[in-house]
Length: 478
Image (cartoon, rainbow, N blue to C red):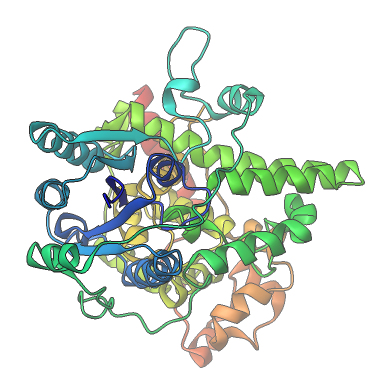
């Protein structure tokens, strides 16, 4: 009896079985679909790779491998350059086609181009599609047929488009034979290593447990209740008001169509204008994610520099001692230091605080955003090149932003969004006994600072605000 033809599905940012566009397409041709994930040294050896992110990825791969086995299939793990390994595996297994999803990042696009060339040279079919976005970059254009560079009109166009429904998951797969398994071992297929095996050590907590099941539970819980208060609650770092799905979105542990469908179900269940506004606010955040990915796709130079060309020569002062104080949460500004310690201890930071600390680094300390952008990538569980770059360029006023100069006041931000100081006290336990008004303004008496072993403010915000504005005016208007 002749076995069905074999197809290979190359997993990258899609570590799930459900709502997986390319996997579903591969399974529509044959039940013999074998998954493969490549541990790429070109990615793992980068100096901005966060240990917590690798631990989350490995945990998600463990569950994905179990899902394949449960369906009767095989998920192969290989380590090395995918440019060589993917074509070699495909040829050795005599596959009919190799499937994968498009990506927006510079390295991924060039890598994929080379893999396509190697496969086609061997006469192997390549089938690719978009999956990590609701709408691909060539679907969202201005009336002049150009990419959007401002979010608000992008949102209006994006939200007007019909949204694709989640795709069905495979119900049964056929794995490799014993002979084929032996063959792929000879080519370098390995058991899934631990993150520590790869040289990444993380003993802290996870804001979201790895794997598809945990992501689905988190999505269900959020859209059942918290989403209806999201519009207001999302701004308060001391409250559990956000979805906490960013790690799952980074690695595609949950499908974006599944997320959108859940938000639409929540919208349909709304019984007030306030609830509907909250649901739409969350949907706008999903669109922000897509905006930044579209921007990275069309303007790949953003990965290495600012969108506003004038910032390429901006006179950043880049004091190393200031930067180290910022990294360690020792600036003397409680809301800034609490946020940085949250990042260092958990691998995650509340989005309101990401804006506060980014503004402080660039506008108060006059340090170029690339330093902070890289530090975030070195520590964030959800570190994503497009979103991280977009957020930092927004905060530095160097990106696609119709309001070019925005400076956050740490004290007023703390007073507005951490009014009782709960968030600050959680992450700066040495300051728990400090008067709330002093805690929020940062105007802590010197004796109390000394008693708590908490540093004095390294800069004066009002002075630095004027200093940055003067630098900006001289550089751009001079």
